[in-house]
Amino acid sequence: MPVSSSVTRLLWSFVLFLGVSFGVYVMFAQVHYAWNWSPALTYGPQLAVGWLTTLGLSLGAMVVSILVGFTLMIGRRSPWVPVQLFCTGAVEILRGSPLLVQLLVGYYIVATALRIGEPLLVGMVLLGCFEGAYLAEIFRGAVESIGASQREAARAVGFDATQTYRYVIIPQAIRRALPGTTGQMVSLIKDSSLLSIIGIEELVKKVESMNSASYTALEGYLPLALAYLIVTLPLSWYARQLERRFAYET
Image 1 (cartoon, rainbow, N blue to C red):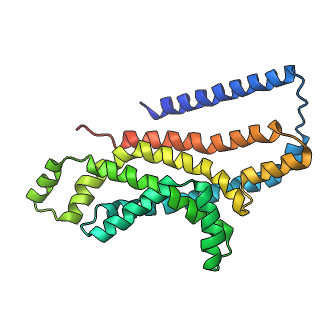
Image 2: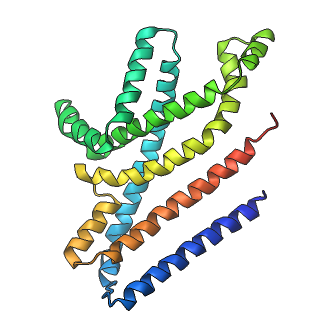
């Protein structure tokens, strides 16, 4: 599909969302909901700072999650049993416990014991580790989906293990892992809203402060949803472009 066609589809999706949002707005207007947008304008600069904080946290956590996911994937495929057990245990614990619990334990117990008093840094690392456990399984599934015949063919032409991964397995695994990875990155951006519980003034925290001070609700949450969509929709579109770029005939 041409790039222009993909952009058109994305724009139409955005227009459809705005239409549905306007319908909700009209519905609440008919049930005599008293809209008050003045607090949103007053708190606009603070909301912008919170949005930028969310973007920075999400970007940093994405880098951490990819590094953690790749490391855990390699560890689970390691020939050394202790390394396998450790990485498998880490993946199961991180995936099997709520992110909220991990944030509370990681910040108020682990970070306090290590004398790390930077909520931004701690939150970024904890969020990256949580999402990295899911990426580890996505990466492992993509790598293990490559047929054994291709590994044998790589050995037949004289490739060692590193060259086999670099030239044969990784290029194919990237394409197969892209859809799941994209979904996990979108989830990471949304999960960043939980970082407010450890005192990080990101977008959701700013909206909650605005709502509490002005006694409003939807006037804060509707722009909040729009702010997240501004980030997640282009990310999904770019991931689809990468899928087409790495497409090949099997």
